[in-house]
Image 1: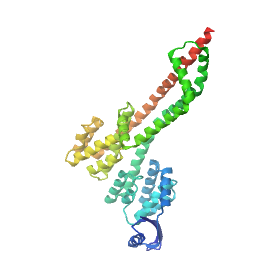
Image 2: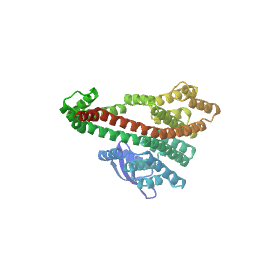
Image 3: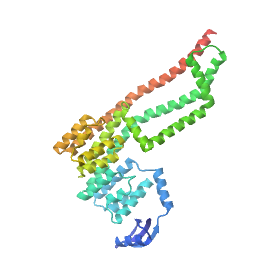
Image 4: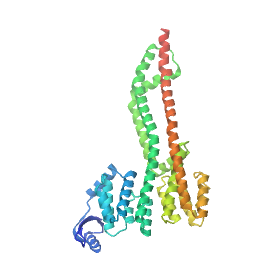
Length: 402
């Protein structure tokens, strides 16, 4: 059970927060053990939990907000501000209400005597295993501020990478969506009126014109059923790829799509190299670092490969042995990892590899945007050509015979 408390410390300052205990008496004892004199202790009601869940659903936490949070925290800690005071200051000025609640809970957990990393680990939906372990490493080595800066830089790099990918697909998605809506309206409401003239003539017409006449009549009568099928199909697809089996199958298919698959592969390699380099540089053991990276890689295919590499290293082998046996990992990456393992400079080699593939992702997204534009023009031209050849040209020919 969780209890909201209001208590006084030895300096007479009022503290408020959250404490976990099996009952009210145990919660009060926990506060007293931590040098706090309880003023009020009350059970957290379900309505409060519902409000937190609602804020999470409404706002969530973006990478940009996390990056800003850790940047501000690093600055305050560098200025020798106590971490609880720093969290309180940052939390008070946050616009994201859900993140403000999370930061407040982290602050309270630290106030109860838990390390910063353990307080972050209580919120796995906001702070990734990579972030938690980097902070834990910084606490162990006495370089917490450096670890927080590194986390902020890592999130920023991931945010920039994600932004580049999204920006490359915004334009084609918008054009395809508009083209679909316009095409649906034309076929449903405009095409039947145009083909009515052909039907009234009652003369022989080509098969493709007959098909368009039938399609226009069908859509005019059953457009609502077609729309319902489309919506149901899209909804079923989205639901399926959110399941474990569907997500895995979709990620396998994604890697096989020309150009898109190459881009996705480069993104995962960049993420793998950057994150593993960061963890190894922070003093995390190789096997543990590989396990953490497998959780944040974002692809089940690469996750299985990385976990196999972790098992190989645990058994006394090397990562490169596993990587060389998989087609998803480019040979150059496997060779670079092997060189890093042999020279003892794996962290530095991975960082260089991550930088290289990050540039490849940026170049691919630019080329993809350039390539998509003529493809969209060709597809739209084909749609117009079908309408002209199938409907307007027969009407013109009939008019010419009159």
